View 1 (cartoon, rainbow, N blue to C red):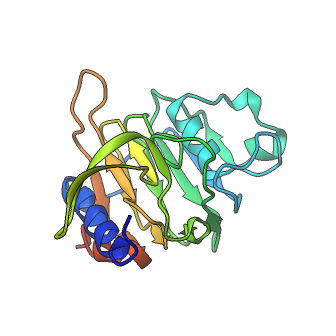
View 2: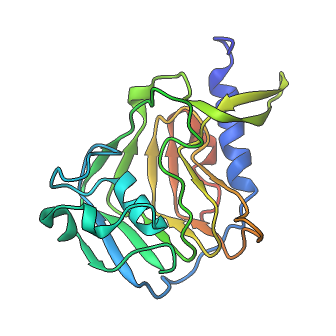
Length: 215
């Protein structure tokens, strides 16, 4: 990436990804479980007494079981999350979650969200991408990169990929993450329908997307 253009390129890419999503406001839907993230580390470690954002996403997606958690982590969850339930991921008040660079190439920095009807309610919390600096996380897939100065494919991982229907992401504050914030893809054999993205704030390199979807 040329040093005189990363902010422009990343800003436009982040905005473009969010514009492609169906943007709407709506009431909170019925949920089968509520998961309260209280770990300032984005991935954390299973059994460390705190529920991380990465663990909450994996629980909601059905790729991590409740039985793997310790008693304190399970206390942050009401109901039984999983791929077939509508789960709401929320945050402890004032929590600041630090995003770390992955050593390997990934589809997204956080685990993919694949549970239909799930929600991420970022009220009162901040996702901090400053540890990544201005250099994006390398992705295991290539994405079309369109700016006013180039048309190319880049291996840049977004913060989160969701491949499910009926997902809601709202009141999420993301600061200084060098890449797209959320990318929605169609689930296997279906379409990415019923998606709601609203009242989110993206600051720093992606600040052009901060007002997208607000109403």
